[in-house]
Figure 1 (spheres, rainbow, N blue to C red):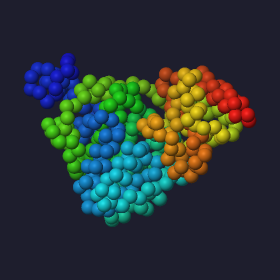
Figure 2: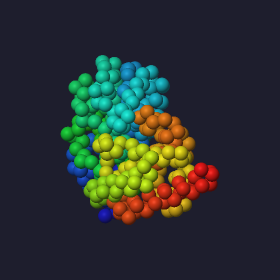
Figure 3: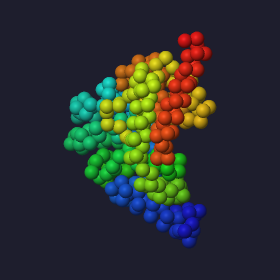
Figure 4: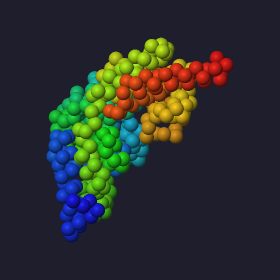
Length: 350
């Protein structure tokens, strides 16, 4: 079956592409447990979040928007942008020191003036899982539209969008081994959403533009292929070895519920960006803060929201283990960290 045709065209090549697109939509819908018509394909999680926020806030009278302070930049920046231009009040809810947003604290900010809420499923830096079920339930009870950024949850946690009941849930293909530049927004039936892009009327008129059929088909094919469950042993082994060789390291969210593959930690006295570059030279790919905010020297906004000091936040690194990684890989990374730290201390005359 060919994917080269335009799925909106009536000729044989277009019909072939349309079948591929429809089959992929059906498979993704079954996996997420939503109606196929509720899915809007996008260029990734960032666009899906932007679509939900603009699509909701542009239809609402000026009111309050309640958002966790640890959201991905595609939520925080977008909400701030549209709140300023549309006259909404933005209220940020900080997490506890353990990295979890307290659901009672969050829900206490939901009132009759609230026009939207945003709460991520799992944090992209710390991996800490947030109490979205109770927050979504509170929003539904008060008829407040809520966006759940599910990008980090896909492939790592059980996903049932219908059972969750959120109005908008965003996902990205590349987090499960699919193509980069493909995402999806699940929109609950009956929830109003302003048109995001005008043109040919694709995606039921919600987002015009020829769909990325190969990317979407790859998204569907990638579902359930990678098993992140076993990476918890690699991640835990890494942290055990790290604390054994560097007892002064702080691991964030160690005692909080986390997705299986993520570890975020601070190496005291070291600049995180310098450590990152030295590890890169040694063949290890790690991150400092959000990978989607590369090139920025600002300390992690997630750690700062958790009450971590600026110096410690600048000394942090984030490691994400893949299904292909082993405990030997984790130990090798620890050994390289020990070597680099000793080298940098020696160079600094410490």
